[in-house]
Length: 280
Image (cartoon, rainbow, N blue to C red):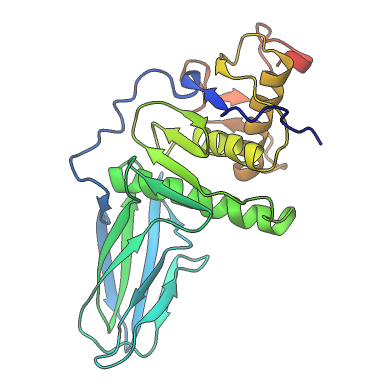
């Protein structure tokens, strides 16, 4: 295993990943508060049931790991809830007609923020109703949730494979539209729904947390030759993004958003103008 020799703050200037057009993430003046884009409801004989999903190209993707406390009985103590792998929370004992809760997008290992306090998701829940909270793929709230989903999936996959004992410091994911780069336990992002870019930048943070190797640093372009350290750190971050999101059985595995001017980037067909071997 390689180890970083210097303790200088790593800075990965990945401005080539999403291109220079950051206008898609048009931040409203809403601070750190977000709400679902829409909701649905159905009959429920009793209790509380809420399903959280993000719609991606017409497919509803469950939102796991949303944690909050709520008092669901008129005179009862508050309970802790966490959305499961299907994006669902349930409470068979819920009796209150309406419940307002706030979900802070933060855990001891990570948080999502606009650059200040963590994002908070505000919800109005009802007993006796099966609710669905829906986030659109590229809305402001949907992009925040997309980053959250990447973080939860990364923690889960790492826990199941190599463990997360190395993950000692909290990683902050800042969704501000000011660039895609990693520096000192902070990941800056332009687009939350750019799954391959988000996982690449998170890969830099994991690479740093685990002490895997050195950072080359500085601005760089995927189709130019790198130094050895830069090629290794960038290559590992892209590997992490692929490991997070793609399957080995995919006959045409590719990144969708990474480096817009050359997207989609396919794994098995490297263009002739791209450097080869250890400088790639």
